[in-house]
Structure formats: C-alpha cells, structure tokens
Image (cartoon, rainbow, N blue to C red; front, side, top):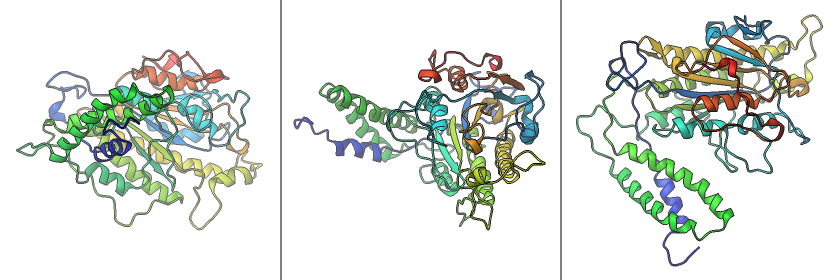
Amino acid sequence: MNTKTNLTRRNVVRGVVNGAVVSVGLPFLDCFLDSNGTALASSGAPLPVCFGTWWQGLGLTPGRWVPSVVGAGYQNNVELKVLDPFRGRTNIISGTKYFLDGKPLETHVTGWQIASIGTIPSGVSSGPSFDSNIADVIGTQTRFRSIEVSVGGTTESFSKRAGSGSNPSEPSPMALYGRIFGPEFKDPNAADFKPDVLALARRSVLSYVRDERRSMMTRLSATDRARLDQYFTSVRQIEQQLDLQVQKPAPMPACTIAQRPPDGLRPGSTVEEAAATSKLMGGLLAHALACGQTQVFNVVIGTMGMRKPGTSETWHELTHEEPVDAKLGYQPQVTQFMALTLQMFADFLHQLEGAREGDGSVLDRVVVLWQTDHGYAATHTMDNLPILTVGSARGRLKGGIHVSAPGDPATRVGLTLQQMMGVPIGSWGALSNETSKTIGEILV
C-alpha cells in the first residue's frame, strides 16, 4: 500500500461497516395504482417484477412427481398435488441433469453449486450465483438488494457474489423483523423529512473512498484489482442505498408494520419448528415485496438435519436407511417429509397471493424458482431433476406447462430466468453445463 495516502484497509472497512444503512422503498397501494392494479397511476409505470428462489434439498420421489402429460394442460402427479391451487401459474421442468465433467460428486453440495452458479467451482472461489446477476438488474433501487432466509435450523445460503463468500442467510424471523422494521425503518408519512445525519456522514465517507479507489486501482496487480473490484462492488451497493435514503420518499399511507414474531421463538430442526419459522418468514417476505423493500429473495429449507419431534433420525439419514415399502413402491417416512416441506412452499405462495394489489396480488409480479440437489436422494442421482417455476413475473412467463427435456443441462432454466429478468447474457454455465438454449416453451 502506498504510504503517501491515508486510504488504508482500516479506513475502507470502516466506511463499509458504518455505511451499512438502508432506505425505505415504496409499497404499491391501491391509491397509487391504475384501475387494473397493474401500474402506478401517477406515471403509468408498471409495477416492478420480483424474483425468488426456494432451495429444498433431497429431491422428490421418482414416479410420483412427473406429470403424465407433456405441454399445457398437465395434471399434477400425487407428490405435487398440494400445488394444485397454483397449477395454472406453475411450470414443471423434468428430465434435466447436472453434469460432473469427470469431477468427483460432493453429495448434496455439487448439485447446488451447478444449479446456482452454473458450474462446479475450482477451489473455493467462483462466479456469482444467478440470483445475484438478476439482483444487479432489478434490485439496485430497493432498500435491500436481496434478502436471504433459511428455515429448519440451517444458516445455509446458495446466493453469492463472485468470490468465496455467500450472501449471509437469516435464520431468525425476529432478526428479519428487526432488519425490516427496526430503528433504521423511517416513517415516510412524517410531515417533515430530515435526512439522517449519520446517513449523510456515511455518504461522505463513501464519497472519499470512491475518489481514492480510482487512484488506488491503478497501483495494484491484476489479482489484487480483481479482489478489490469485488469488494468495491459492495461499496457501490451501499452508495446506492445511501442515495435513496437521503431523498424524501413518496407517501405510503397503507404500509404498516408487520406483526412482530412471538418472543422466545427459537428456529429449530423439527418439522413443526420449521413449519412455524417458514410461515413467519413467508409473511415477512411477502410484506417486504409488497412494500418495495426488495425485489429479490432466496429461501433455503434445511432438509439435511430435519427430523420429527422426539426422534434423532433425520430426513437425510432416512433417505439412505429406510427401505422402500414393497407394496407402496417408495420410502414412506421420506415421502412424509417431502409432503410437509412442499406444504410449506404452498403456504408461502398463498401468502404472496394474499398480499393484494388492486385486482391482483404480489404473486402476479413474482416468479419463484423451486430447485433441489438430487433427482433421487437415496442414490444421489443427478438426472431427471424436479424443477418448478411459479408465477408469471407480470406476464413474462407462461404457466401450466410441463416441459420434458431429458438429458439437457439444468442450467437451461437459470439462463431462461436471467434473460427474462434482463440480464444481458447469451449463455450460462461452464463445460457440459454451459448452455445457450432457453426453455422457450414457457417464455411469452
């Protein structure tokens, strides 16, 4: 580091830590909407689209989820019957696979890596997950670029920017409530608007860092420039948030504080604890989307350690130890876990549907991607993967279609959703997982 400048690592870190403040976005209230509830009345601008992922490990049961009909007009197979209320807005993609390209399979990890970043990373570093690419397009003008939550006693996150670290996931509904409605939440309906003095000061600190970094980057090696570019990406995000915070927001008279989660709630790994946490997280995420706090979210269901109350045997252990019932043709206890977590997903969709906007709902402008790590957890298969999309993202996706794509890379789905959300890429993934072919059947 050049000793002639006062820009030290300590200065930069202080700027980021002290600058990690947030601003308040707008809800999309009926009084702000056109007569159809699809656009802002004042400008005619359409309501912003939102994107989310729902990561649920341990696959589904072969033969119990794939519809018998390909194309439009399918009926849900038994395992997905719980999603019948959303069938017209749900697309099912079957037959795709994760390609290992000669690399060893790290069970319950490799699948997530390929699904989220398009490849198996070399070492600990990799490119960004595709939801981060989407957030870079649609999430720059909201209080939170994205929100990550985890359910079931886990703190996993499959969302990451380029490099080695994942975007931190929040396992506590109370903590998530505090992030959204804590002391930094500002009342946009106050008669007088005064920018937070600390926000102005932090903005000045980051302005100094911004000026200094231009000079600093010219004095570093290519490796250090790449490392600092990743770091300064986070700084730029904070700058954008501060720019929003020091501006007077438009009134939001119907945006009320969500109900506070009950005191003493401890996120746990039993199915009952996970279901309670999932319901609370879903309500908070629905509110965050409805109030414009974020446009991107990621949910991880901690299936690996999930268990029933009073037992120590986990869902994961049962996938390997429970025998297939000769009469039923599947593992009954494992299938019960699948039913319980798919119900959590359905409940979340109902919460998005229940957040009304004009004649529609938040779900009308959202698309949620459901993915998993293996096709069949008992044998760690990487083919015939169950993949679902729910929601149209304000008419950008068709619904009610079963797409059969046997042997195709699962990355086709990630490419499709990125392009649909405006990410300027023509292909995605690496080696055998690279693809330039979208799932055209579901695109409008």
